[in-house]
Image: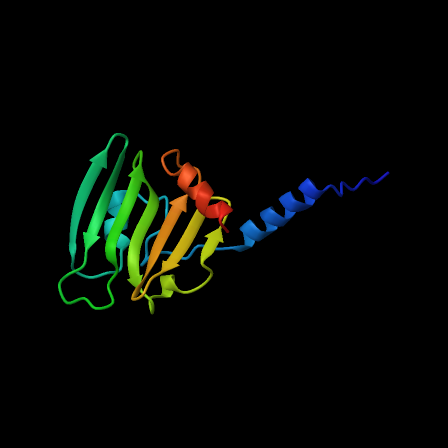
Length: 145
């Protein structure tokens, strides 16, 4: 005998799984979540600029500042790490940047990307959903989808 569960919660769960599994979060100038700091610095495709770091408890961040006169370079670029792995990327990018275009929110099983346009720029947040430091924020972004 074949049994099919047609409950609303089952259908909703299946729909969310299918929707999440098809979405793909693009890389951010050559960088993807899960990288270690060295890989972020090595693979970030922007030339020049300066790197600084910030630390707080088990978390730390590296911040990239564009060189003077870089018209299309991302601004306020911050790469956040938890136990050595990249778990969040935050930056302001030009509206013409590839990462600035597409759906306002992309949710996958492991990642949330949110694009927030302003007058001149688009703010981009890319968060790991499993990171304990960013879990609540990632949940809010995913639920707002």
